[in-house]
Picture 1 (cartoon, helix red, strand yellow):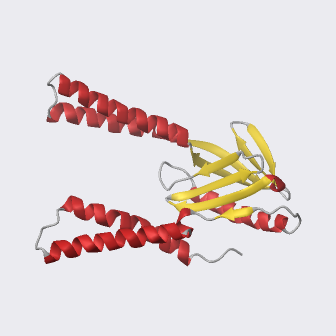
Picture 2 (cartoon, helix red, strand yellow):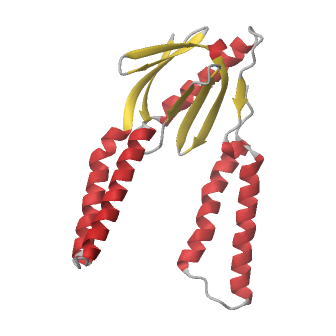
Picture 3 (cartoon, helix red, strand yellow):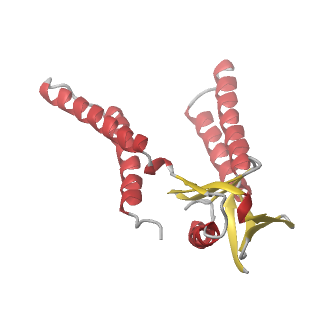
Length: 216
């Protein structure tokens, strides 16, 4: 059995911690405004405390996970709890790559297994990517032995929607720039960033997917 030791992202923990920090900032700002103590110093202290809290709790964003590939199943080992999942129980799977790797496996009983890694927070996307490559190979081998199909779902950047979204944003952005040029109106930095950031965020990921070799 081939094993992969992964450091994955716990989405629920990230959501709880980030939401708590955001609530702390909002509540602090509200309290300072109400008490007339809001100034550059108190705002800076609040912001520094929020940033320090984020970096302190950052270590709780991840967890250790061991994945294993066998001839007829794959297993997950988390917190000393092992789960062996036969390939025949898999209905579909999806692999997404943007800021890290995301694997989503949907079983025939509608249970969903999601494993997320990021290039940040100390997780290991390169190991999960290696696992996904071997996982797909095993799925294809198993597909030839059973009659039940296992569907590979497209990631967002493999869909036409992603392409249409990029084209739409680009047209709107170009239109805004041309309007500013021909009407001699200055475009402020904020407006320019609102136009450019979505394009530079979508384009590399879309090009990466389109240029990837087809599945073997």
